[in-house]
Image (cartoon, rainbow, N blue to C red; front, side):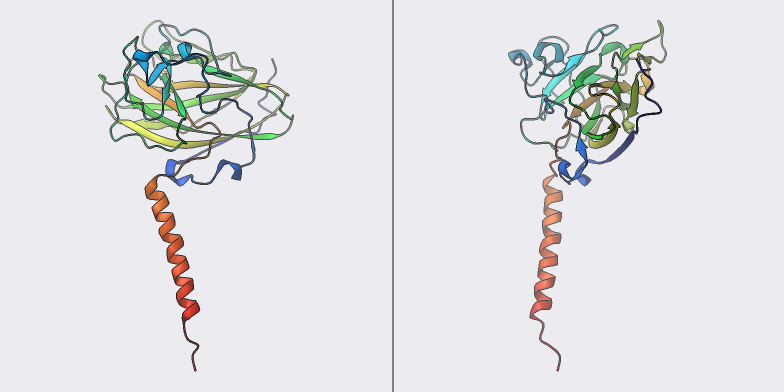
Length: 279
Protein backbone atom coordinates (compact mmCIF):
# COMPACT_ATOMS: atom_id res chain seq x y z
CA UNK A 1 0.00 0.00 0.00
CA UNK A 2 1.36 3.41 -0.84
CA UNK A 3 0.32 6.94 0.00
CA UNK A 4 -0.83 8.81 -3.09
CA UNK A 5 -1.79 12.11 -1.45
CA UNK A 6 1.28 13.93 -2.77
CA UNK A 7 1.27 12.23 -6.17
CA UNK A 8 -2.25 12.47 -7.45
CA UNK A 9 -3.93 15.44 -9.01
CA UNK A 10 -7.67 15.35 -8.38
CA UNK A 11 -10.34 17.73 -9.54
CA UNK A 12 -14.12 17.37 -9.31
CA UNK A 13 -16.65 19.53 -11.10
CA UNK A 14 -20.41 19.13 -11.40
CA UNK A 15 -22.71 20.89 -13.83
CA UNK A 16 -26.46 20.84 -14.20
CA UNK A 17 -27.63 17.91 -16.30
CA UNK A 18 -28.93 19.59 -19.45
CA UNK A 19 -26.21 22.22 -19.38
CA UNK A 20 -23.58 19.58 -20.09
CA UNK A 21 -24.47 18.96 -23.71
CA UNK A 22 -20.94 18.71 -25.06
CA UNK A 23 -19.86 15.21 -26.07
CA UNK A 24 -17.53 13.44 -23.68
CA UNK A 25 -14.91 13.28 -26.42
CA UNK A 26 -14.42 17.00 -25.89
CA UNK A 27 -12.77 16.19 -22.54
CA UNK A 28 -9.28 14.79 -22.01
CA UNK A 29 -8.13 11.17 -21.85
CA UNK A 30 -11.09 9.09 -20.62
CA UNK A 31 -10.49 6.60 -17.86
CA UNK A 32 -10.89 3.20 -19.60
CA UNK A 33 -13.84 1.92 -17.57
CA UNK A 34 -15.59 -1.15 -19.03
CA UNK A 35 -19.34 -1.87 -19.11
CA UNK A 36 -19.91 1.82 -18.60
CA UNK A 37 -23.69 1.52 -19.02
CA UNK A 38 -24.19 -1.44 -16.64
CA UNK A 39 -26.03 -3.23 -19.46
CA UNK A 40 -23.79 -6.27 -19.98
CA UNK A 41 -25.08 -8.67 -17.33
CA UNK A 42 -24.02 -12.12 -16.20
CA UNK A 43 -27.63 -13.05 -15.41
CA UNK A 44 -30.96 -11.71 -16.73
CA UNK A 45 -33.42 -9.78 -14.63
CA UNK A 46 -35.76 -11.86 -12.48
CA UNK A 47 -39.23 -11.69 -14.13
CA UNK A 48 -40.63 -10.48 -10.79
CA UNK A 49 -38.01 -7.71 -10.81
CA UNK A 50 -38.28 -7.03 -14.52
CA UNK A 51 -37.17 -3.38 -14.38
CA UNK A 52 -34.83 -3.35 -11.39
CA UNK A 53 -33.02 -6.25 -9.71
CA UNK A 54 -30.36 -6.88 -7.11
CA UNK A 55 -26.79 -6.09 -8.18
CA UNK A 56 -25.69 -9.47 -6.83
CA UNK A 57 -28.36 -11.24 -8.90
CA UNK A 58 -27.63 -9.75 -12.32
CA UNK A 59 -23.87 -9.24 -11.71
CA UNK A 60 -22.81 -6.57 -14.25
CA UNK A 61 -19.73 -7.77 -16.12
CA UNK A 62 -16.53 -6.00 -15.07
CA UNK A 63 -17.95 -4.70 -11.80
CA UNK A 64 -17.49 -6.30 -8.38
CA UNK A 65 -19.10 -5.73 -5.01
CA UNK A 66 -17.14 -4.79 -1.92
CA UNK A 67 -17.29 -6.14 1.63
CA UNK A 68 -20.66 -7.46 2.80
CA UNK A 69 -23.09 -4.89 4.11
CA UNK A 70 -23.48 -4.68 7.90
CA UNK A 71 -27.24 -5.36 7.82
CA UNK A 72 -28.43 -5.92 4.24
CA UNK A 73 -27.07 -5.20 0.79
CA UNK A 74 -29.68 -2.99 -0.87
CA UNK A 75 -27.89 -2.33 -4.16
CA UNK A 76 -29.51 -2.75 -7.55
CA UNK A 77 -29.22 -2.41 -11.30
CA UNK A 78 -32.21 -0.77 -12.97
CA UNK A 79 -33.37 -0.13 -16.49
CA UNK A 80 -33.63 3.43 -17.75
CA UNK A 81 -36.66 5.18 -16.25
CA UNK A 82 -37.30 2.62 -13.49
CA UNK A 83 -36.18 4.68 -10.51
CA UNK A 84 -39.75 4.52 -9.15
CA UNK A 85 -40.13 0.76 -9.76
CA UNK A 86 -40.68 -1.62 -6.85
CA UNK A 87 -39.89 -5.28 -7.50
CA UNK A 88 -41.99 -8.29 -6.59
CA UNK A 89 -39.20 -10.44 -5.18
CA UNK A 90 -37.09 -9.27 -2.24
CA UNK A 91 -36.68 -5.70 -1.04
CA UNK A 92 -36.31 -4.04 -4.44
CA UNK A 93 -37.67 -0.68 -3.41
CA UNK A 94 -38.96 2.39 -5.22
CA UNK A 95 -38.09 6.01 -4.56
CA UNK A 96 -40.33 9.03 -4.85
CA UNK A 97 -40.43 10.50 -8.36
CA UNK A 98 -41.47 14.04 -7.50
CA UNK A 99 -40.61 16.15 -9.46
CA UNK A 100 -39.25 13.31 -11.60
CA UNK A 101 -36.13 11.98 -13.33
CA UNK A 102 -34.97 13.27 -16.72
CA UNK A 103 -33.69 10.98 -19.48
CA UNK A 104 -30.14 12.15 -20.12
CA UNK A 105 -28.36 9.00 -21.36
CA UNK A 106 -28.72 6.88 -24.52
CA UNK A 107 -31.52 4.32 -24.68
CA UNK A 108 -30.54 0.97 -23.23
CA UNK A 109 -28.41 2.46 -20.46
CA UNK A 110 -28.93 0.92 -17.03
CA UNK A 111 -28.29 2.62 -13.70
CA UNK A 112 -26.80 1.51 -10.40
CA UNK A 113 -28.86 2.21 -7.27
CA UNK A 114 -27.58 2.04 -3.70
CA UNK A 115 -29.11 2.71 -0.31
CA UNK A 116 -27.32 5.72 1.16
CA UNK A 117 -27.34 4.32 4.70
CA UNK A 118 -23.86 2.73 4.96
CA UNK A 119 -25.27 -0.19 6.95
CA UNK A 120 -27.45 -1.23 4.02
CA UNK A 121 -25.03 -1.20 1.08
CA UNK A 122 -21.63 -2.23 -0.17
CA UNK A 123 -19.20 -0.50 -2.47
CA UNK A 124 -18.84 -1.43 -6.12
CA UNK A 125 -15.47 -1.36 -7.82
CA UNK A 126 -13.61 -2.12 -11.02
CA UNK A 127 -9.92 -2.75 -11.63
CA UNK A 128 -8.69 -0.43 -14.39
CA UNK A 129 -5.69 -1.72 -16.33
CA UNK A 130 -3.47 -0.41 -19.12
CA UNK A 131 -2.91 2.96 -17.47
CA UNK A 132 0.09 5.17 -18.18
CA UNK A 133 1.78 6.39 -15.02
CA UNK A 134 1.64 10.17 -14.78
CA UNK A 135 -1.28 10.53 -17.19
CA UNK A 136 -4.35 12.36 -15.94
CA UNK A 137 -7.60 10.58 -16.78
CA UNK A 138 -11.13 11.96 -16.94
CA UNK A 139 -14.02 10.27 -15.18
CA UNK A 140 -17.50 11.54 -15.91
CA UNK A 141 -20.78 10.15 -14.63
CA UNK A 142 -24.28 11.18 -13.72
CA UNK A 143 -25.76 11.06 -10.26
CA UNK A 144 -29.27 11.41 -8.88
CA UNK A 145 -30.98 10.83 -5.56
CA UNK A 146 -34.36 10.03 -4.06
CA UNK A 147 -36.00 8.93 -0.85
CA UNK A 148 -37.45 5.44 -0.42
CA UNK A 149 -41.23 5.43 -0.76
CA UNK A 150 -42.87 5.23 2.66
CA UNK A 151 -40.30 7.39 4.48
CA UNK A 152 -40.08 11.14 5.11
CA UNK A 153 -37.48 13.72 6.06
CA UNK A 154 -35.03 15.79 4.03
CA UNK A 155 -31.84 13.96 3.05
CA UNK A 156 -28.42 14.62 1.52
CA UNK A 157 -26.54 12.36 -0.88
CA UNK A 158 -23.19 12.17 -2.64
CA UNK A 159 -20.81 9.62 -4.13
CA UNK A 160 -17.45 9.04 -2.50
CA UNK A 161 -15.14 7.95 -5.33
CA UNK A 162 -11.79 6.28 -4.66
CA UNK A 163 -8.90 5.58 -7.03
CA UNK A 164 -5.94 3.50 -5.94
CA UNK A 165 -5.40 0.29 -4.00
CA UNK A 166 -9.07 -0.41 -3.26
CA UNK A 167 -10.33 -2.40 -0.29
CA UNK A 168 -12.77 0.31 0.75
CA UNK A 169 -15.30 -0.60 3.44
CA UNK A 170 -17.33 1.08 6.20
CA UNK A 171 -17.37 1.02 9.97
CA UNK A 172 -20.50 2.02 11.89
CA UNK A 173 -21.30 2.50 15.58
CA UNK A 174 -23.52 0.02 17.40
CA UNK A 175 -26.14 2.68 18.14
CA UNK A 176 -27.26 5.72 16.11
CA UNK A 177 -24.37 7.75 14.75
CA UNK A 178 -22.15 8.42 11.76
CA UNK A 179 -20.24 5.70 9.91
CA UNK A 180 -16.73 6.12 8.52
CA UNK A 181 -15.03 4.77 5.42
CA UNK A 182 -12.19 2.30 6.01
CA UNK A 183 -9.22 1.10 3.95
CA UNK A 184 -8.67 4.48 2.34
CA UNK A 185 -4.93 4.98 3.01
CA UNK A 186 -3.82 3.83 -0.44
CA UNK A 187 -6.47 5.73 -2.40
CA UNK A 188 -7.19 9.21 -3.64
CA UNK A 189 -10.75 10.21 -2.75
CA UNK A 190 -13.00 12.67 -4.57
CA UNK A 191 -16.56 13.36 -3.49
CA UNK A 192 -19.33 14.36 -5.86
CA UNK A 193 -21.24 17.59 -5.21
CA UNK A 194 -23.78 17.20 -2.43
CA UNK A 195 -27.40 16.67 -3.45
CA UNK A 196 -30.07 18.06 -1.11
CA UNK A 197 -33.31 16.11 -1.49
CA UNK A 198 -36.52 17.46 0.08
CA UNK A 199 -38.70 15.07 2.04
CA UNK A 200 -40.53 12.54 -0.19
CA UNK A 201 -38.99 13.92 -3.36
CA UNK A 202 -36.10 13.20 -5.70
CA UNK A 203 -33.05 15.08 -6.96
CA UNK A 204 -32.74 14.89 -10.75
CA UNK A 205 -29.79 13.56 -12.75
CA UNK A 206 -26.74 15.84 -12.87
CA UNK A 207 -23.27 15.44 -14.38
CA UNK A 208 -20.09 15.03 -12.34
CA UNK A 209 -16.60 15.39 -13.81
CA UNK A 210 -13.47 14.19 -12.00
CA UNK A 211 -9.80 13.74 -12.87
CA UNK A 212 -7.34 11.22 -11.49
CA UNK A 213 -3.64 10.84 -12.26
CA UNK A 214 -2.40 7.27 -12.51
CA UNK A 215 0.48 6.31 -10.22
CA UNK A 216 0.50 2.65 -11.32
CA UNK A 217 -0.42 0.71 -14.50
CA UNK A 218 -3.40 -0.78 -12.65
CA UNK A 219 -5.70 1.05 -10.25
CA UNK A 220 -9.01 0.25 -8.58
CA UNK A 221 -11.98 2.59 -9.08
CA UNK A 222 -14.49 2.40 -6.20
CA UNK A 223 -17.91 4.02 -5.70
CA UNK A 224 -19.36 4.38 -2.19
CA UNK A 225 -22.88 5.79 -1.73
CA UNK A 226 -22.95 8.26 1.14
CA UNK A 227 -26.21 9.62 2.53
CA UNK A 228 -26.77 12.11 5.34
CA UNK A 229 -23.06 12.38 6.05
CA UNK A 230 -22.79 8.66 6.75
CA UNK A 231 -25.60 8.54 9.29
CA UNK A 232 -27.01 5.09 10.07
CA UNK A 233 -30.42 6.56 10.97
CA UNK A 234 -32.68 4.91 8.41
CA UNK A 235 -34.58 7.68 6.59
CA UNK A 236 -33.20 6.46 4.06
CA UNK A 237 -31.43 8.44 1.32
CA UNK A 238 -30.89 6.62 -1.98
CA UNK A 239 -28.28 7.29 -4.67
CA UNK A 240 -28.21 6.55 -8.39
CA UNK A 241 -25.24 6.30 -10.77
CA UNK A 242 -25.29 6.06 -14.56
CA UNK A 243 -23.64 7.24 -17.76
CA UNK A 244 -20.04 6.55 -16.73
CA UNK A 245 -17.91 8.26 -19.43
CA UNK A 246 -21.00 8.44 -21.66
CA UNK A 247 -22.00 11.54 -23.62
CA UNK A 248 -24.95 13.36 -22.11
CA UNK A 249 -28.17 13.36 -24.12
CA UNK A 250 -29.76 16.83 -23.88
CA UNK A 251 -33.46 17.12 -23.17
CA UNK A 252 -35.77 17.99 -26.11
CA UNK A 253 -36.35 21.47 -24.69
CA UNK A 254 -32.61 22.13 -24.72
CA UNK A 255 -32.35 20.89 -28.29
CA UNK A 256 -35.24 23.14 -29.30
CA UNK A 257 -33.58 26.18 -27.73
CA UNK A 258 -30.30 25.33 -29.42
CA UNK A 259 -32.06 24.89 -32.77
CA UNK A 260 -33.91 28.16 -32.38
CA UNK A 261 -30.65 29.95 -31.63
CA UNK A 262 -28.98 28.47 -34.69
CA UNK A 263 -31.98 29.32 -36.88
CA UNK A 264 -32.08 32.87 -35.54
CA UNK A 265 -28.38 33.35 -36.22
CA UNK A 266 -28.78 32.00 -39.76
CA UNK A 267 -31.81 34.17 -40.47
CA UNK A 268 -29.97 37.23 -39.21
CA UNK A 269 -27.04 36.48 -41.52
CA UNK A 270 -29.42 35.97 -44.44
CA UNK A 271 -31.16 39.31 -43.83
CA UNK A 272 -27.85 41.12 -43.71
CA UNK A 273 -26.80 39.40 -46.95
CA UNK A 274 -29.93 40.62 -48.76
CA UNK A 275 -29.73 44.21 -47.50
CA UNK A 276 -29.29 46.67 -50.43
CA UNK A 277 -26.11 48.76 -50.41
CA UNK A 278 -26.62 52.38 -49.51
CA UNK A 279 -26.24 55.01 -52.23
